[in-house]
Length: 191
Image 1 (cartoon, rainbow, N blue to C red):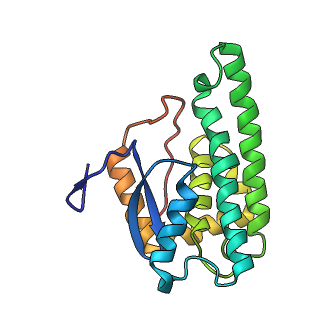
Image 2: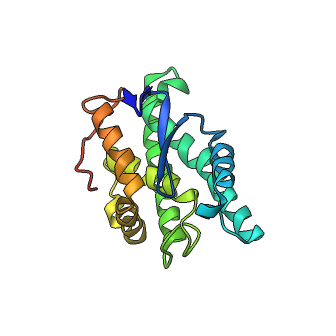
């Protein structure tokens, strides 16, 4: 796929949204918080990290939790064969991971309760990552719409122009594909 004159492989790169800019980063969940932190610091005027040192640490801690717990849990849903060769173990793993992923979504909903964004009133680098998990929940037919704070947050994210631009690129490049080879449930994506 060509994006701005650059070939982007949708299976190797993930669309990222920071402020009003969209860019693509090599997929690596362990490095993602560091990469996004570095990017945020390159554009300090965008205020993508909290200005208070304690709040910045909380933001980075949230990103680390996303990368080390929430994101890997989803991998157990879509790629259980990476973790177990026995079919019955894979089925059990998928179901257990779905329950755990749902619990993570509920925790994110709790963190968003009473807040506009993950870190409160300020949009930060943690917001696109949280939005990504809401979208994954929709894709595997979890009832994320029941999570009021998370759903309202998702709707706010969809109002951002950069989110809409990345969404357009994703829709164009991934139409009809399924990167994980498991059940894929296409859904209406607003925005």
